[in-house]
Length: 395
View (cartoon, rainbow, N blue to C red):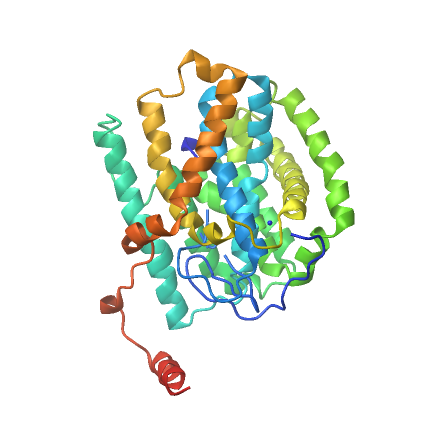
């Protein structure tokens, strides 16, 4: 998402039984087992070759969600010019990251401290974070003209906050599987963060903690939960839910501080009393779940032309930010015709087309060195992994 980000067929088609998913920044999923990584991730999944029989639902969901991310970033400069755009912006920001994060948590259920999984976490999350945090900082300094911009791996800038969050969430996944009431506990931590402005900007911990309940919810979800939200009855019920959201969003857009949806500030920093942080944490969590369930209800479960793009959403997520920053730097969206209804539609379609191209296989091949480096030279091969490889070779 911009500085704000600083930073899924037929109804009822059954999901395959859950088995151990592939590990990586994104998780990976095959048809006996679905998957996902870091915004994405497990949210936006990385671009490894899709396993045979990948579950189309999750790839479709990730692709559609990343399209909404790009649209939201495109709408941001147009806020205040069109109340309709303001309303759509608030609604999209209410669920697109929660949807990504829930998928990330779902495919982190089997994450543990096994060496090969830790290795994939480093190559699929840590290394891309270091490279893109550096690239974005240099871009802002030398192209954006911000001479004060420095490279600080402790203070994520722009889109890279999600990689930090995913790294921390993944490492804590085994702990959340141990506690008795993981989601209420995560909600409590989120509410506590929302009333603690002293947390500061290090590692964007406000976002890490305030978005944490969605990741933990994904951790405790099972395949039948996704089957449930894809029933025809839920799809029908989602229509009035979305209609009501549009009405409320249209009413609230000029009255509400949309920074609440970014989850990066404490209540006091938004000019609200501390208790409002607790209320808004719970209220936004409930609203986001309703909208996310409505979104999942309408995600296709069959293969479509865009299904394969779901494996490249991390590429689209991290790369489209350079175009968004350029549009701000050179004021591409400040022309009068862009502010017209036709201009707004055109720019929205353009954003969807851009993110689609950035998720394609040629782009993945071009940037795989940064997103999915092998780095065999950096790691020792443990005995268990060597045994698995020998067994695979002998099969």
